[in-house]
Length: 193
Image (cartoon, rainbow, N blue to C red; front, top):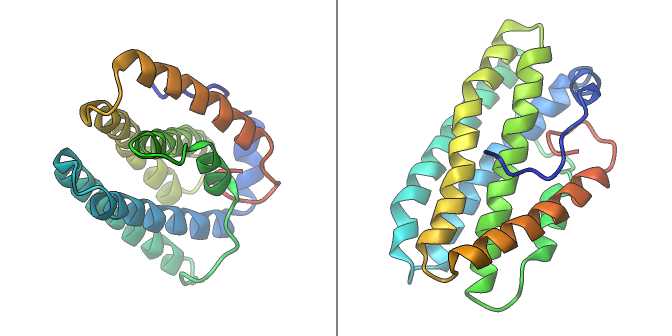
């Protein structure tokens, strides 16, 4: 269960497909950032050893996805390069509280929602794309994105820094915020707009 408080309109996929080169570049950046974020948690919170192995594994998987997307870019005679990012993640994490361990919990939940929204959007793309290689990519990544969503929620719970009722309440609050962020996102050809 992805816990998203809003659903992406089906028209998003058909509009996005018209700009697949930009979307693939954005996707590569998202995978790179996801790997970096997982590693950053390990460095930032060494007092939570339960984060180390799951996030190390997650980071490696995200880098494999990054390499796969870069390969598809190259197959289209494109290269990985800078791109103006969507403001989605930056706006999403604005809800994170400043004091620890609340900040860590909120950031883990925010990461879970990023993965959930990616999963939802990749499913829409896999169903709408006509290009076999791209359709296969997005269909293949669905299970990983859903698993990453669950990993972040499970890690928030396993830290022992929050009780189950408070965690569920915070997931609902951040989910509502995420729905607002995605609704207010600018019209850019990106995974999270």
